[in-house]
Each structure stands twice: as C-alpha cells, then as structure tokens.
Length: 70
Image 1 (cartoon, rainbow, N blue to C red):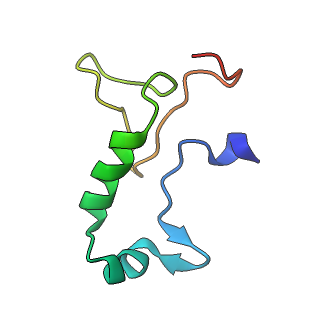
Image 2 (cartoon, one colour):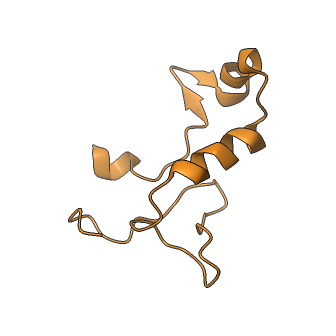
C-alpha cells in the first residue's frame, strides 16, 4: 500500500478536492506544493541536475528505491 502511494500528490482527500481543503487555510495549491517540496526528503526522490524534485504531469514524485536506504 505504501509503495502504491509513496510520492503521489494528494489531489483529493476523503473525496474532497485539495482546493476545498486548502480554502479555509487561505492557501493556493501552488503555495501548498512549495511547502510540501520544502519538507520532502530529497535524498529518496528523483532530482534534476539543479537538485529540484522531478515531477510527472500529475505532480507525482519518483522514489529512487524502495529499500529505505538513502
């Protein structure tokens, strides 16, 4: 289960779109993504040459390996 969801962006939570969840917090999705990126362990996800997290068209990350070794 963890492997299926690891690195996936949470576009919904309990059938609520992320925009609805963030609205009471006065946060945009872009602001939320920036906060998430700050706290993401960059040692375990794919990065580009500049050290930025590489995301697919859905905002998902790619884990480098699944043996929990950095």
